[in-house]
Image (cartoon, rainbow, N blue to C red; front, side, top):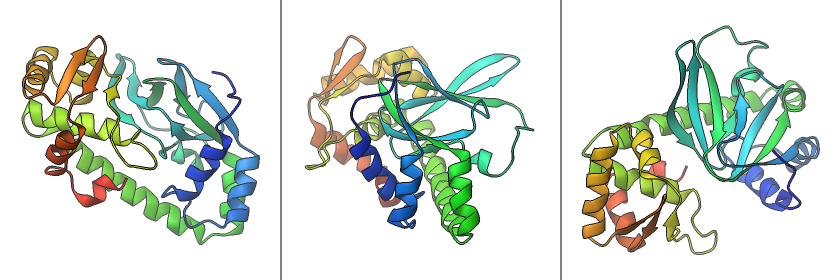
Length: 245
């Protein structure tokens, strides 16, 4: 983990547009931002663990693996992207009294804004109506997760891969044109984890997509040959509400 030399302008802009804070006044967000620290994480580095620090983490760039940790070990089960907020439970209770514990590791070079829990609590305590907007955001996020789970875990392996590639690409599409990136840095093993499938099934489905000239397989990365067609196929499965999150 290190402190990046730039990125604060992007972080502040995203903070104001994110579903968690888009109803907050600019002065409150400025106060929150001034007390927060921008951090950069290398791939595979742990970025957050339940109740390890008294802070919440707002993702600015990159992506993060979500893992469940208990006596049996650690199991990855999903991925989160920019504008997501980790650690909301700290606002509700001071200690963790349920098991298992959740751990988050960078899936690629990732930038995040560490927000002190006390800074958010101070604003919420002074303006209790903001709890309502935070609760609404949590409900929207929960619904988003359910819809995403249905897309990644239901349907054929090929359909699930298309949704996974699209969702990963949406998080890093061009801010001006909205076009998907031409390269995705996910290995076949990581894709298998993301859609909860086996590597042989994923390899077979990827070869089908390559034969259809949608993608080109490279070492630990995938080149998107036809981003528009990939988007069209994905949107046939994605609902409008999912596209906007």
